[in-house]
Length: 156
Image (cartoon, rainbow, N blue to C red; front, side, top):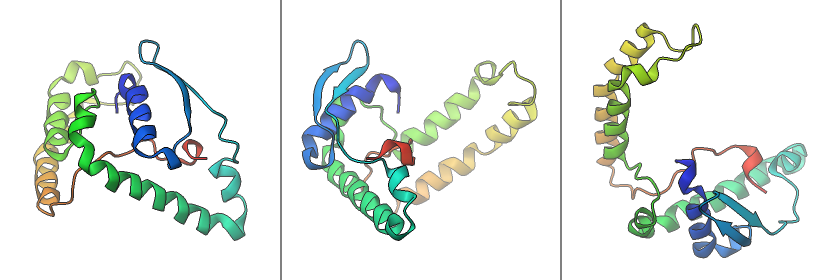
């Protein structure tokens, strides 16, 4: 997700899921910043350090996350209308191919990061990415939001 839409998405998710979101005190899209109420709970990392609670904690987080994913499926048009990037399967495959066609932007001036051979290898994967997206689309699973930053430091 592009960072410039993070505030918009966070505000919208707080409206859709007030019981599973931190209360937003103020949002400033021009500065891409949020002021949120103190959630007053321990971080997921702290809870995971308690072996007797770790599994139940992970199950709880995944339950809330999946509820939010399913719940946003009916709101995709609204999310797109407020500027959330469209990352549905057909767009994902198209973007993958487009990014790889701009080879000069992929070259990083750090040795060993992304070689020309790596770039060619990624470009060769484009048909496979299209095919996998197409096959996945046949399952007719509603396409919804995906948290590309799903790591323990993001959950409280």
